[in-house]
Amino acid sequence: MDEDVTNGVPLTAEDEFWMDKMRQIAADSIKSVEEAAKQLIGMITVMEGIYAAVLAFSGIKQVPEGSIVGVIVYASPILLWLIALFFALRVFKTKKYQYYSNSPDSAAETFQKIAAFKYKNLNAAYIFVCISFLVAAGGIMYWLYGGVAP
Image (tube, rainbow, N blue to C red; front, side, top):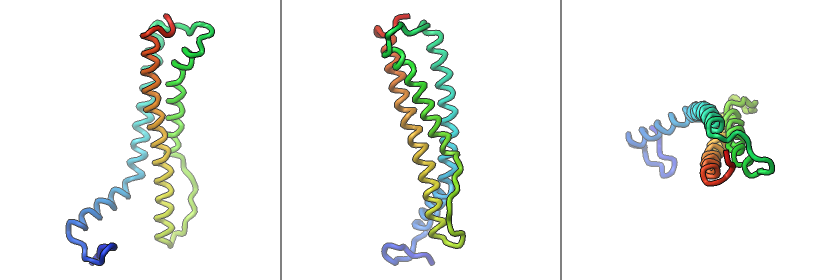
């Protein structure tokens, strides 16, 4: 019978249930991070298309000469999306990890390294997407309230 590592008491059925749930979550963690990255890549692609359409049909044909602020304001979301796309794609980057095939500790450590790498890159992608929303909203406000005139 399994025992609770912290106090040596046998695990109850409920304890077993929660331990099994955590094992399943651990087993599915890489797959769920990769699925989230796929969704984010699709979302970034759609946002870039919508943003390009908004710029094309909003009356902003060109940024006046010397208006570096306008260029930065309107180009920043695209740059941020490209950076987010870079990090989201890194989730799928394969890497060679050395581990000892007969060592559970080595296997666990390698799994944790892989999961941490993927999660770190997914998190970075989400951060850049969130920042891009703020910058795009700022660009809209800039255009609406006296920025670059059409």
